[in-house]
Image (cartoon, rainbow, N blue to C red; front, top):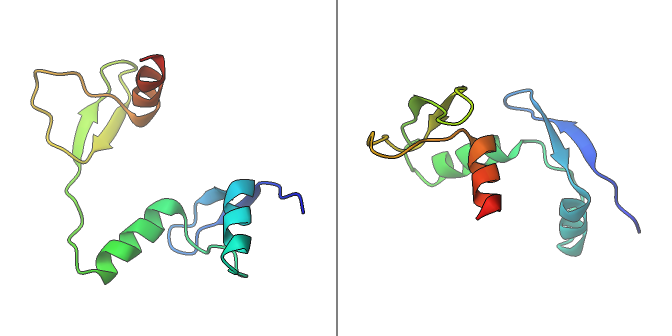
Length: 95
């Protein structure tokens, strides 16, 4: 059976997220019949709250590459550049 990416809406935050063909194949291989109802971020937050973990503090920063405002899960030291997720992925791919 060929799977195709599906766009679903998160029940917690309301954002659209992609249920990829690879994820669908994984769900089928594990016998899971229902599609996920939450996006990746909301699933992770729910898992943390279930395990009694506190939410990680986020710090507001400006990306050193594109100057976009973003949040990171660590306190910047000031001696190294901090990137948004998109710029970080691009920099990581070039290495």
